[in-house]
Length: 107
Image (cartoon, rainbow, N blue to C red; front, side, top):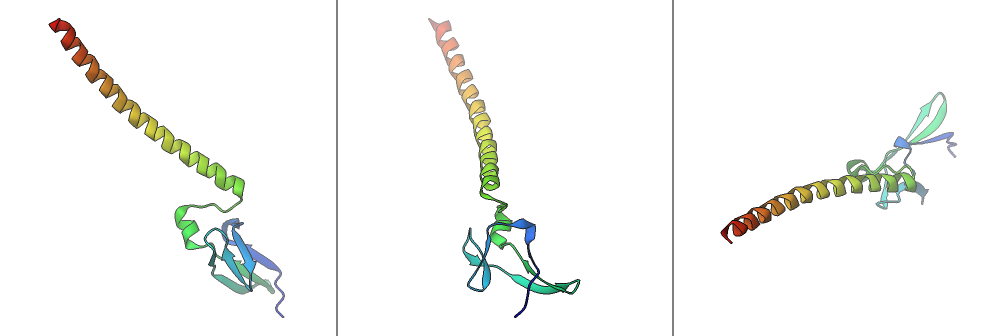
């Protein structure tokens, strides 16, 4: 039996688990690519993160880090929505005041 002295996970992803003689991503529940090698006369296993996690920017460090990142992104989006809405609201208010002034001049 091969004795492995070290298991490395790319970028320290804690979403990776070993089950049924293989590694898989617990977030997407898919099998992961792994390599067995020898470094300094010691056997090592390198497990790569799933491409979906990499593409979507999921950190996979731990649940708190993932939640903090989600909150940060949501706050940025809320800020963008607010300022976009704020500009439209100001434009609508300016239009209403112009109409009101025209009506006031006519009376």
